[in-house]
Structure formats: C-alpha cells, structure tokens
Length: 255
Image (cartoon, rainbow, N blue to C red; front, side, top):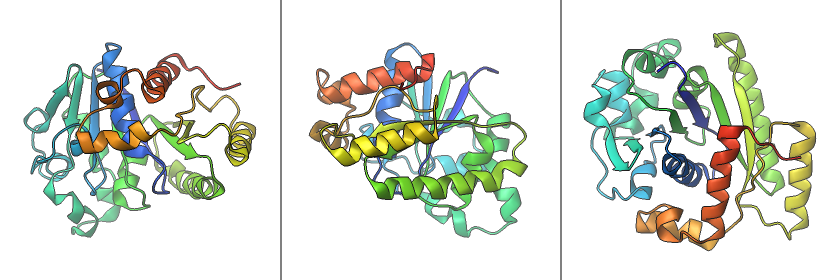
C-alpha cells in the first residue's frame, strides 16, 4: 500500500529503550486497529523474545534481504494486527558479508519495493551502531523515531545520530521526518527536566507529547514475553504507550 508508514526506531546509544519502544508501541498501534509489522534489524535479536518467542525463528530479516525469501513465509503473526519479522540466525553475519557496501546499504529499500504485505505501520528496531544495518534503515524509512533518556549521555548520543543522518542526506531520494520522545523519564529528577527542555529548544514541534515514564513493569515485560498491555494493563507504562501511539498517529507534539 502506498500510504504505509515506514518508521525506524533509532538511536546509536544503547540502553535508551529502542526494543521496548518498538514492542509496546507496535502493540499499542495494533490495539487501536492499525495493521502493524515490527522488523528486527538488530543482531541481538531481542524483539522475538519480547513478544513471547523465546525460541526465535531461525530465518528472518537476513533471509528476506539477502536471499529474497518471501516475506509471508517469514512473518510470525504474534498478536491481532501485529506481525513480527525476527532477526534470524544469520543477521549477526550481515556486516561482514562480501559485496559492495553501497549496494548492501540499499538491500532493505529493494526488499520493501519487491515484497511487502498490506500493513499500515512498519517499525524497524535498529541496532545501537553506525554500521550497514543502520544505513539500510536510514535509506529506506520515511521517518525515524528517536527515544531520548533523561541524561546528558543520551544528548551526546543524539548529536552523533544527527551527524550520521546528515551524512546520508545526499543519498536519500526524499526528505525524512524526524520525531523524538522522552524515554525512561523520571519527572522528579532535575536532570530529566533539563534534558526535556533542551530537546524542546532544539527540536520544536518534533517532540511527541507523551514521555514514557521509568517503570519496573516495562523492564520486566521481556522476561515474561509479554507487552505492557498484557503484563500490567492498568500501569503507567500501558497508559504512556497508548498515548504515544496516538501522538504518532495524530502528530501531537509537546508544547
């Protein structure tokens, strides 16, 4: 479908909640009636167990990109309206595989043009790196969604990400939308508030309205193989991700 949203969940700093956000935002969108596919571009392969597949599929993203395996043979339908393309066993080898880096950087773009089912939202869980998998995401997606935690190291990582995006601008055939949201946010911490203020100053009208509050339940979900809506449906985390999904769909920004 032409109006599907291709969104990379991206931050080159680790520990900011990319997989947690991809999992729970994907389920929040699916619960609202959107048809959603989440794709694991991270060789750490955390997306499958986060959705309850503790014995992850052997085949996944790498087979889709390199072998042109049909997507419908690789997708696991994990929840109503929510499909998963797991990383698979070979994705760890992707960066070292032979071939021209410039050609391998466009494999995702080619796969999306070749073989895509009917989804409203496709979310890509990206690795915390600057390698070829991240390059594939940057060249293929329409938008990136950047989780930013309430600490200065996160801001430093964000500066690195923005330089990476700038470097790829000449190679994209269309502009990329950039959205940010506060992750693992603790409102009572002065540092968290300062980071939020800096983010708003640097990216006005680009910060989604709902911060994702720090919560033990969100950290516990992956071990149970459940999303926050299944693990603790009346929690702050469930409320936050429901609201963040609405922010994304309706373009509601923090004032």
